[in-house]
Image (cartoon, rainbow over all chains, first blue to last red; front, side, top):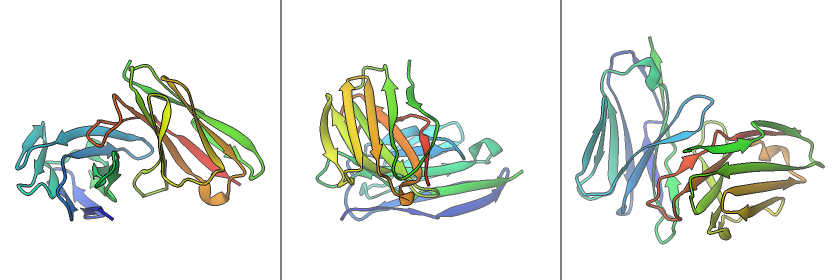
Length: 111
Length: 114
């Protein structure tokens, strides 16, 4: 079945370094969403991308949707300790009205 | 009010117990969801309610029984659970059902089955 693959599984950086997580699908996605889950917390919606080649920014976060709408990335510039958490991408399951979450990338930061 | 409220926050139950998880939202959302999340894993969809009717059941064992008394409330009744059912149970809502809808998650119920 259609899956949304996310890499890397873990990433540890020094505070101030950049961070990127990637999401890939074997099929074209109508949209992709990104969520952040802090340790001990719940997923919180960050953004939704819909258009081919779309790029959206939220302060230090940059989200991209690939031209073929099969991949997406989240890039954080100059990480801060508040960025710690697990970042999930989520895409629609083919033929179904539901989202499928990627495995997540767990970001830890050395202050 | 942009919150999804879940109670209780923590629950410990034996395999013979019956308990219920509760979820409430007052955003006027018509779709409500139950997700199960194991440690270091993504949320996995269990049930979807749309306009108070069960829309999706992801082949969840019958020991989990959802209920949607009205458009603001969602319950998950638990009976004869197994230790492997221990997980974080997340409720979510969205304006409507659909894969392009933004999900609002509650803070979850951390369930331990002994």
